[in-house]
Length: 521
Image (cartoon, rainbow, N blue to C red; front, side, top):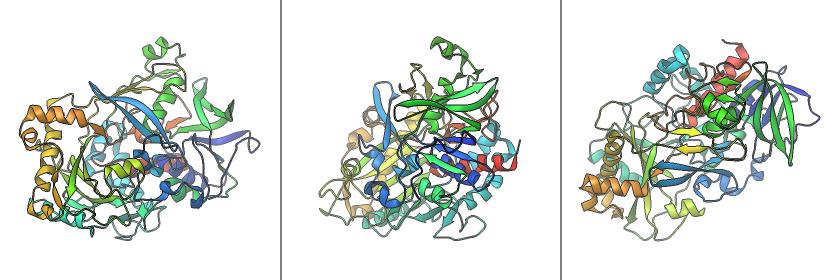
């Protein structure tokens, strides 16, 4: 894919302006540009490399997770509060491909019950699993299963499942079987949750982000322009209709006009842009001196994410083999004891690279412990996003609201204890000498374990629901009360899915693009 540069001089007005070239934005823009009579401008705040050699090596190496490296230039940091007394920094990709360029390459579909819940919340029949399955098939080339009722073989995103041949992955699988968990060979089907490989958009050791997967397919089209280092500061709304955006590039601000504006800037930036543009809760906007364009109380009022803690274990051998194709090993999904989510709301994800390597940008750290990333993926929305300033450069305030209920705490204790049980099996003892922490006495005591979890609490960075279906946008992402303005990213998912949302973000881009191309209302 060639670099696409500046938008000046190409067109005075575009049919569609897409803000953000990430998981959803790249997919949406590429599909829209397939229609030759529609002009599309994509504005990406980060750099827009061309062919893969133009990307920094760690952005393509699927054994690394650039988003885990503090201060990496391809990410945008946001201060957040996970729980009382637990400040944190969350990050989002700021480069072509967005967070798909810096994340772990996890590409697992949402569950059927997620689609049922989203349909009931405002998506309607459009958001049923049966209606979404053709889009899920169309966006992928499944290299393991090929074309069939569940999978596609002609889509932009190549999907391959992680190799379970690594000794640690094989031991994890054996431990899961010993404890009675079923096998789940295809986590992109809708089978009973259990242990299996992780579907990934990393192939042969290369993380293929959505910028490369989608936009390279339409590169060179005269009706598409992707402009990097172009930060959108707000949406221009005139007489109730979005007519363009204010963009800053090379230190200069200008207004770019468009027939329709689609915000694909992610679940943190898209709601921030709406609020800065006067679309949101009236009282909060007025308090900041932002003229109210449309009172939409749901913008930023709630969001969901997945709390996570890292459990490390010591290998028996000083040096296990380095992973070959991905940092990911296997994954175990299971329902929590409440029984509310049979699709499995607890996740134990295996890292074959030490945490010291993930945060330091190295595959090998001799002698370092390896890790399980354990999380609760219950579709709960207890967070809130709001503005503290009308300055577009000031980050929004993020309060995740983790551990607020007894159920939150119970589920995290449960997934930590299941992980400890797995690590203590004879099967896993073949490779591991046990968890480094928490100690057995902590594991046995609810109060002590709650304290330990709070002190080690992190997040999967799976934010959803800041501009939710039903209360803020319709089934096709159209913002209530503002013509010509849509949101198409995980902002619109009313609750986070039971699996990480990267694949669902791409799905949103596909869905909204299809609606725009067909003029659906």
